[in-house]
Image (cartoon, rainbow, N blue to C red; front, side, top):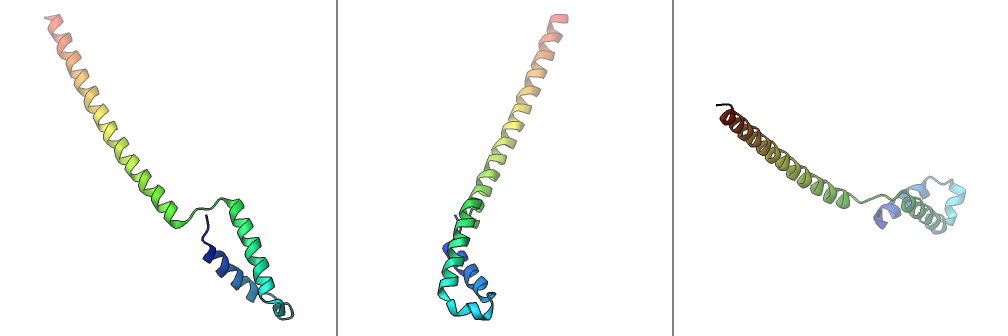
Length: 93
């Protein structure tokens, strides 16, 4: 979920863009911006930088495990192939 501080900062910045005459409404405009931004961001299903970093870390560990497993499978396939070749060579002689 998006940090409330980000929404608050955006709403303050947006309220500075409001025409001079409407700025007299001040906190009411900012409050409405904050509500609108909060609603929009919640619909987008955004994640925080921290959540993204955690998922990147999990993905990196998963890739390492997959690479290790792929290497192990390759070793086992090679060993099996060599064993079959030896067994086939023994039957021929």
